[in-house]
Length: 292
Image (cartoon, rainbow, N blue to C red):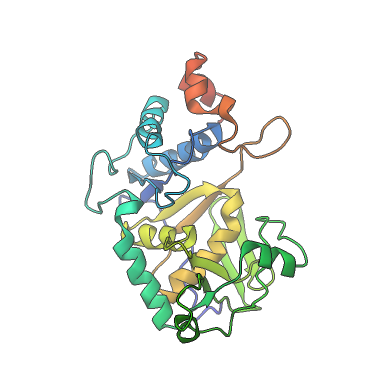
């Protein structure tokens, strides 16, 4: 981004106004990797006497299960997490369930559409995989080849049965940079390190990138703490902040917790879920003892 139009991405000075967040998705049991990142988020909120917000990211009804929500809150409380705003206690920026915030996402989508930042894309995942030369090593997502960049909504409206995603057009060749509070200066080149990305899915659901930006801005989050696997996502989101004329928060990305094979933990690692570890008699203090 050019210095004259780049959004403010410098780390915020800690102070009473610090607002951090925990943003789990109820698609499975929380595991030790979630706990490690969330614990860093809580420590960074507590250090300046700030607030911690719990947001339930339940917009994808095809993946989440309702029973995981109370289990998620119970596991977080057991581990020692405390938040000042959330779905169980309310707060000034309610609702804290993403499934109840669709009106905000739709308003942002319309703003992007009116500004010419997005276009309808009829490509399937298979189409993109077949057209791409290789997946991106950072996020295992192939670079979108731009097949639908010249399509417009009026053309698709003449074909009512056509399903399409709304895709954000990245400024090819532009370097997106930000200073991460943990890893330092980060740079990505649009069109090379990441391509045009989906902001609204064909099944009428906002994509993670859009929902995350809208909610973090609306809830006045001053710093986002999350895993290092989302570093490239931050570059995408900075473009959305700019397009929507929103001020981005600071960012702190944490190293990932790996299993014995060197792979990052996922919700398939049931043996390392907080619930399983609790049933094994492990205590939160014992699980945290090597974290420093």
